[in-house]
Image (cartoon, rainbow, N blue to C red; front, side, top):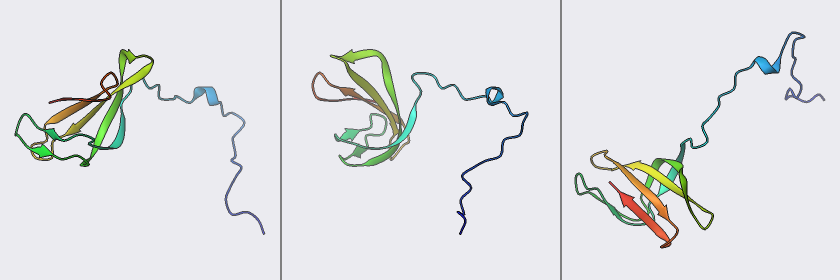
Length: 102
């Protein structure tokens, strides 16, 4: 019996791979991830408390020109569950924790 998945693809004779434009992403591009709060947080705009373990869809980026003993520092952006204000958490490897910005 033949295989149902097409493993081979047909490329015409005039096909040139170099002519395909590829998206060049910057070195510090943001990725979308699912993030869970590891510390309790409070929104400074509306005063809403978000408990530890609350999950968010967030953006993450590596902070440029900031390292601690070779450890990369990351910044997470997420929105308040009540007023949709953007909050920021930055990793703090010097104190083994996080810094919360509103």
